[in-house]
Structures are given as structure tokens and as C-alpha cells.
Length: 115
Length: 115
Figure 1 (cartoon, rainbow over the protein chains, first blue to last red):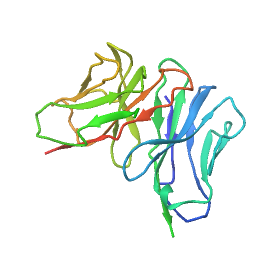
Figure 2: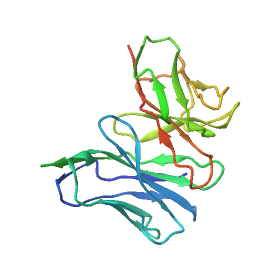
Figure 3: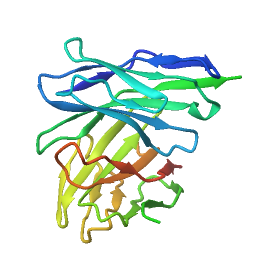
């Protein structure tokens, strides 16, 4: 079974600064997918960024980028130029490629962006 | 607008009563999912369906039931057998069950409270 661990329950960053959220996972699979989801106070889950395990290049989406270390089973999210609208819960999620694949979520990191 | 709708947004139930949560999508997605979210935990999969008239149990299916009579609809029934039903319930859908291109899109959620 796969597990996803987010060791930072809460984090805070000042507006315009950079913050990194950590995520580690455990799996015996060689090919899989990793995601970061954002859940703002509205509780709507929004996909932020995704990474394919067989791709060495780290994914980037505007101010959001990941540091994917496959050997270390680490998948951190970096948010640059933080904005007040980035305040939210952030969930790391793992998905296998098989027919029985499902999203396995971490427990989340609550990020507060302050002035 | 294409998307996923869940109703109601808030639901109150007395102990011993069954209750049904609605989930509708007009994205023409094949797969649909139900997740439960509790404070301090990530999302946990209750049931999922890849095609009409077919569905599978997720990690925490006990006390829940689903149906998939139409592609657009995937209602979840919380039965009296569910011992701790108070939670936030999220419905999601995706193009196909397998593969990377099947990003899961989430509905706005239903908050169920058992009185």
C-alpha cells in the first residue's frame, strides 16, 4: 500500500516571499503520478501541479514548481512570490498507473500568507 | 458551464436515518469518485465507478452505498450502519480511471452533520 506523508501541519509566509512545502511517499511502484492540490477556505479542491515519475524534469506551473527526488521519494512544492490568495490547505497526492489506481492523499499543510 | 455539482451544501441527519448525497457532472467523464474528509486527515476514498452500472469499494466503504445508473450521476447514501458519519464529503470525476491524463475534478462538497 502507498502512503503519503506531509510533516508540516502549518506554515506561514510573508507576501512576495518563497515557501516550500514538503511531501514524502512510500511505494514499491516504479511508475506513478504525483499531485499537489490546493483547498482554499471555500473547500473546493483545485489541482495545482502534477508530476510523472518517469520524467526527470521537475514540473512548473507559473509561480508553482516542484522538486521531485525519485530515489528519496520526495516531492516538495515551492511557491514563489506568495500571494494572499495562496492561503489554503495544500495536499500532496499519489496515484499509481494500474487499473486499480486511486489518489492517496497526505494529511495536508495549512499555509497562511501574511502581509 | 461544465463542472460538478453537489447538493445540498449542508445536511443534517438524525442518528439512525439514511441520507443521500447528490453528485452530478456534465463533463462527460467516465469515472466518478466519493471521498470523505475529516479534520487533520487527507481525503479517503469511499467508492468509485469507472462506467455506468459498475462501481467498486474504496478504502472506507463500510456504512455507505452508491449507484451509477447514469453517466452523469453518482449518488452516495450514508446508511445508519456508518458509525461516525459527520464529515465533509467530496465528489470527483475524471475522463478515465487509468492513465495520467485523467485529472480528477472535484465538486464543492457537502458537509454532513449527524445530530
